[in-house]
Length: 583
Image 1 (tube, rainbow, N blue to C red):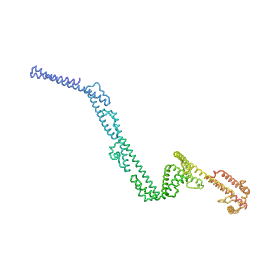
Image 2: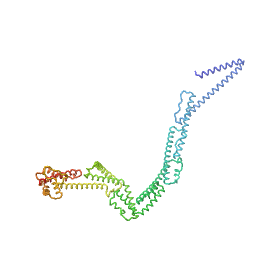
Image 3: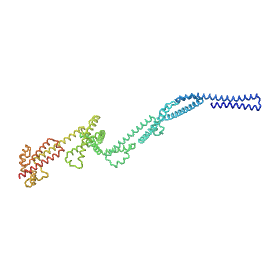
């Protein structure tokens, strides 16, 4: 049994007890029956009225709850549609009171969400409006009358964040460009004259419209100012270059240059005017010292001719260089020529530097070749020979590579320029080929000279012999003094006097040439056999040497010396032997 039912039964019992108690009171008082009935009716009426009122109130409550449920259901449906959320699912087997409470709670929750979304939407719209005004952009398209969805709010937030980043980026760009513009204006001594320039320089940065058009206009203005500044700087640098050139040509001393040092930097109008005044003064001074200036220019011209590898004909083509009529017109011709040559050198600087590098390498190569043919290089100390050989081997590898690189670059240049690249009046590769050919001819000539010299020396030694450097005593000879004999023989040979042996040698010269032996008709049978064999070996070696020119280079110098020594030793021994026999 429910508690409410128990309370209802207890209420009935209380009512009965109250009526019994009333009847007892009435009995004691002696109230007649009619009045008891009347009073009982009154009690009944009071109780009935009370219960009727209570019932009416409860019925009213039930009606209100039902109405509330119906209203909440309708509003809840509307909110779910507006917020685009799932409809509320009512619980089954629930009381009216609980249902009304659940519906009312859900309605309040959705109302709160709707309010928060509307508030955030309004805030985002305000921020969007502010940012769009600064950036000069259209506002975000969103329906302010409806409740935005969570996705729409998220997109709106991202849009506002993007606008904020764009604003910061453009503001930084604006501040940076503004500073550069102000610096350029100060450098150019330029006063803002247009409304846009005044807005940039004078107004508050936060009030400037950061539109793409304004940023582009800012950049354009900065470019114009920078171009103007660059022109001024170029003009000032040109004036400074003129001043330095005139100083050098006029040989202005340092103490006169120092007062002008203050205007040798900067590009402001006052600096430019001061530079122009100095140029004018120097130009006037140049006209007063025209001969000295022309001579200075000619020195510079000669330097450029050397750097550009001008031939003699190309140099002579500039006839004013050789004129001695020092006039203003002659000076102008020299100025124009030096400007043309300077520009020509700058345009082809890389090629000229490459050719210069080849020239230096070629001279070094020739120097190594000269040292390689010098026999005295084998007597060096300290490892210089090894170092030179390494450098020579390296140069022999790098020189052809350098020639190939220059050839490719020059061919490309000639195709682009539709003209030939000349070095000393001829094409570079022709010039290189000519240098190699001259080097080859010089080597061939030197080789032939060495061969001829060695041939003559060997023939002379074979015919007449040569004085030994350190003659030694020979055992088994007569007790005569060999030193005196050798001295007399050698003295006679050197002085041109004919000794008996020498006379016989000359008389039998024809036999020697026919028989190929130094002993034909000239020596007695007592002469040792090894002398004859030694002479034959020398003669055969020389025959091979004379037939093969390659044996005459620097690598066979030692062999030639050994042959010469053997020949001289054998000839001297034969002379001494013959002298002793005759005596």
